[in-house]
Length: 135
Ligand code: CO
Image (cartoon, rainbow, N blue to C red):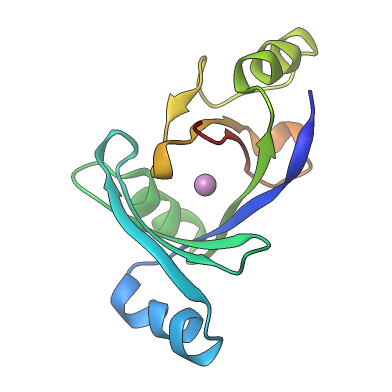
C-alpha cells in the first residue's frame, strides 16, 4: 500500500457551531465544506489548510457513533486519516496481515472519499482511517 500523506485529523464535538469559530476565525483556516453523512451518522465540518484538513465531527441522526464516542471518551481527537492510492488494495493487504478493521469493506464517507477504519487495538491506541480520494 502507498500512503500519500495525512488527509485530515478528525475531532469529535457535541456542538459544531460552538467549536468551529476557533478553527475558522482564530486560526483563520479556510472553510471547505459542511456535510451530513447519514450512512456514517455524522455531520462533518471541514477546514482545509492546504496541507491537511481539520474535520469537526458531530452526531447526526439516531444511534450516531459520535454520540456514543463522546459519552465514552469525551470530546477531542477522534481519528487521523491517511490518504492511500488504492483503498481496495490497502484493505486486502491489511486483512492479509491480520490487522483488525472496523468494517469488512470500504464505504463512501465525507467528500466522496472511500474510507475504511483500522481498530485502535491494531495501531497503538489511535483510530486510523484510510481514505482514497475520488477521481
Ligand atoms: Co475522517
